[in-house]
Length: 396
Image 1 (cartoon, rainbow, N blue to C red):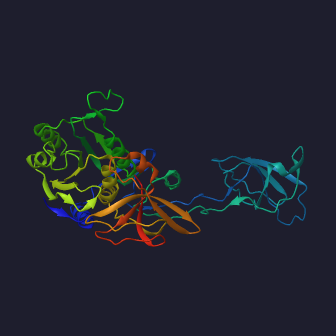
Image 2 (image 1 turned 90 degrees about the vertical axis):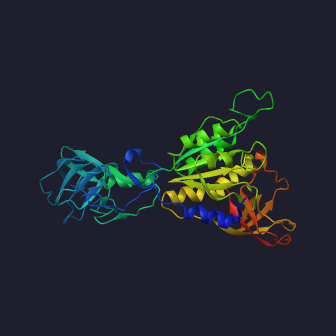
Image 3 (image 1 turned 30 degrees about the vertical axis):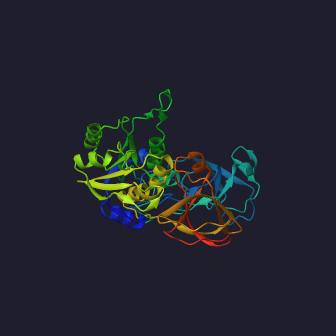
């Protein structure tokens, strides 16, 4: 078996990847997508000086008082008013309506003191309530590529008058769960069955990384069935098999993948949990074989699948390793790099971390209590309480 370090495994995988390209989508279907090109505004927003209130537009030139204005017309949003408003005149105006020539101030409608015929008097107002042309943005304003689209950005893009935009394609991922013992959630767990949980967590993680995940039917521990399912999934950008990754009698994924034409870059990683993780490729399709233990599979998702999905979408988000202060003593580490489930506490601009005692790779309850991983190198010596450790915040 070809065993590599966790760092080398990640670098090797990333070296196999090319971004998967871009496509055009309508802005109404663009939420969560990632811009593949800069967007440059060609228009002013607002396109002209306009009212920010419902009220009255006045020409206050040479008037020392707010009293005695004469109402001469009405200005609606989306319609033009061609007459020039003279000193001492007022027009009824509504939010978003263009400011007519001659108007230098908007009096909010609640400041109207009296209206007798066309004669108006107002309470004074210090603000002008006029939005100037281009105060939102001007031609040349740019939204840079690689931004992930949220509601605020989508609204801004619509205001820039774009109806379609170029975005990065979503990575398509096939998830293959393998094992005679697996049963679909909700079914009976008689006859030594267990609920197939890993695939659903991994699918959710892929969706959180802007990927499209497809759950394939559960596959029995039969080499031909596994090979056939891998072959049928070679149209995807990434294939992930769950389970059958070790070297036991019924761990058949490695041989089945070879039969399907996968060329492996490595077959073991010197890490804990996740040692049986394997990675390879056929054509443009990446192939990951990850362990069946739930914690192992999800931690492998954070350490490998996340960076891969980023790279497929043209980004280079590697693992964000930070410093934290250890709350309790830790023993010396063994021969494998260890990612230890832990509780991160932030207080007074400092990060403190406490490892969980139970590090069993099947214990999802502990993983759900954890919000970080303490990263310990191979043969790292014991660390006393108050010492510094490296951590990764969990996003799975």
